[in-house]
Image (cartoon, rainbow over all chains, first blue to last red; front, side, top):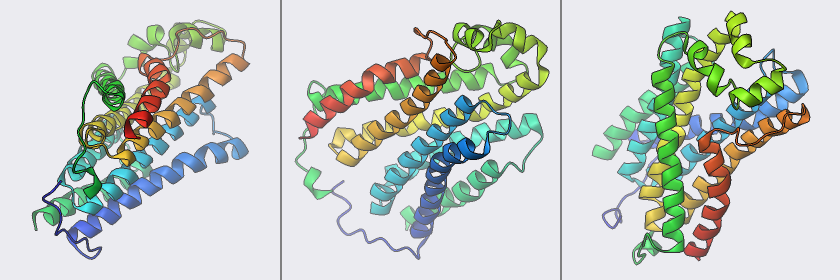
Length: 132
Length: 173
């Protein structure tokens, strides 16, 4: 922790863009976790059991909270451990979507695409940014 | 961040016990998620395991909720089992990331006395518990009497989160 005193964060740098992508993905999950339970109560669950939808939404919200906290208080301060936590957690979540895609032969599920588009560039840029 | 430089973490302190509670929970979640990945790695996992473990809470509670044995429902409804097979894969990925975040935040944050890390862990656990409470309420509304039907990770969180939150709050003060 003491090796960080001269760290200056810039949004227009690889680490800054990585932070923005991770933040965006965290915010998206948080938003989905909050909005879906409200929307499904108004418009219905399209055949899905409400309990499963609620539980999944809460898991999205928890994921979003974790993500936003680790990005803001960790990666934004230049902490390397934050990047590896984010990489491991986001790739674990992406792995679930990859297994889903492999069985369903569906690689266009929006959540899978969001996960891939946000997290893979964010991890690569974050790694480059922390090395600079 | 600089205010943490003199912080001394001890496992046998209120914050240390809180950290242990959440660390164990995180490891349980990781183990459960990896087990789910393994058990549902091929199509047909739902037919093999959901009869005993249930589709939502437990075999017993789900059977009472559906009004007939869940194993019968699974055998008859091919679409349901296919969807559940797919959902379990996505589900396991989310749980694995939850566990990784929880363990890592306790290890790198709570042990350093970082309040934001501690409250993030507490809040995320409460959010997931709220999800389980919503499920349980629906079951109870349908006249199902719930006992130890929640998954072990949720039961542990139900007991551990308030204790951990209280101890951690005391420790951080």
